[in-house]
Image 1 (tube, rainbow over the protein chains, first blue to last red):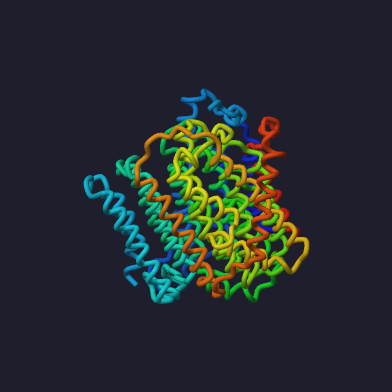
Image 2: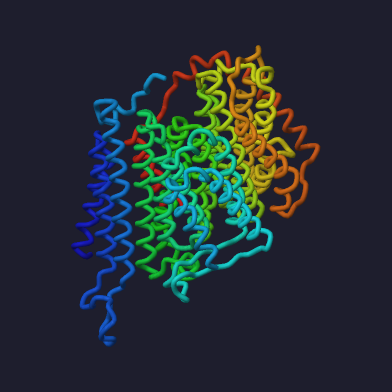
Length: 112
Length: 512
């Protein structure tokens, strides 16, 4: 098996473990962002092919790389950034109100 | 064809320009909804369906939109729903262009989502809908809503990245993203190769459509948001996951998975109703019952034939009556200044105008023949009839739904409630929804399902017996023990929710 792919899968497992086990909201957000990055690296690894040139029309005889994955992954990065930013904004407001961002503090029922 | 592109871009443009159109802003909103209603009716009545490709002649390279009967009918329901929400919020949110901006944005994205025929577009649009819904949840900037919103956002964004892994898997093997092309490419591939992608995508959409045991974000978010936002979330937005579920499920077409989804749907239906029976917070009752009904819909969709039509019908009618129930619940909370149903009594004497649509909504959700909810439920029950165990499961779920809404039936009685003044537009919105439910139940449901009018004397009799038993149960078995019941608390934390997502994934991998 390919060594890079193996490393990426190990990283994926670590990130998933972190997502489950994180006790703090900011930790969860960081792991969430890492999770998104790992997926992007995984996709780029899977579609990578050796000895290809950039997809700009020029010499027709040579082989081009597939341009779609790059476009997709740029969109995915933008989406991940937007979700992370929104989650961080919420956490700022929550910290102002509750004074703590630990999940166990956040999950207490507050009085109506 | 350009009209479809414009329909997607127009709401977003109006939303952006909204701040400059102060005076005629509300009128534009109504005009836009009527435009969508007209478009939906046109597409449905003239039976327009097919694939429309933008940007390139080749479907593999352009952006393709798929229009069919299902999406046109959903567009009609959506526009009626948005008219009612607009009327309900006429004096509050509709006055503020900055807040309505998100609703316009949501509209454009939602219409694009209904028509999108491309895996990656579905991924982007679902995530956009998630982001906007989490902003809508905190539209009043309450801290409690923010807690629910951050949970909602993180859990749903996590789920949608699982969907992305599924897309990567499929793209790696087929080289396509357009759903029809992927479908034809994977039909010849061995099933074992598709299993991980199928399980990943189904787990992701299972989280989005809140099936058991992944429902935990739904009751939190839906019970703390502003009334109209809860209605929007429970009526329309929760169906985005389900709508994508239908598309992806049909794309894979793995027949072995039917049974596991019926079992999951059945348990969701029963557990959602049981948890709704336990609650005393009126918005939580509505939210948990949404979970229960989503179980019905999923079961309908995985069964072919009458089950699928039943699922579609139930989805449309559920959008109307659940949205309406949330709106009515909001009015009750305003009247009594509490969410506790034990302190709400006497609506029939206090506000008769409100009581009539309220009774219609309750009867519709309980599956009273003639009203909207019945046909869908009857078709799903007929479709699961091939197996005795499933039939019993769903009959029990139907009965539990009746019990949990019989609880809300008691709000009508008691000594006269002191009511406050509310605007006539709110009544108008509720009456529109009630009329839609009656028209649907009497005529349109049978028309959509090609079966005509299917109410039988036996069905009516059975419903009344179940209703009487439900009232009896609530009065003598549930109401005396409510104080003990509310102490049972089993809300999952983020950690448990994530673990249950992995458990669900493992379950799917093992059993398909």
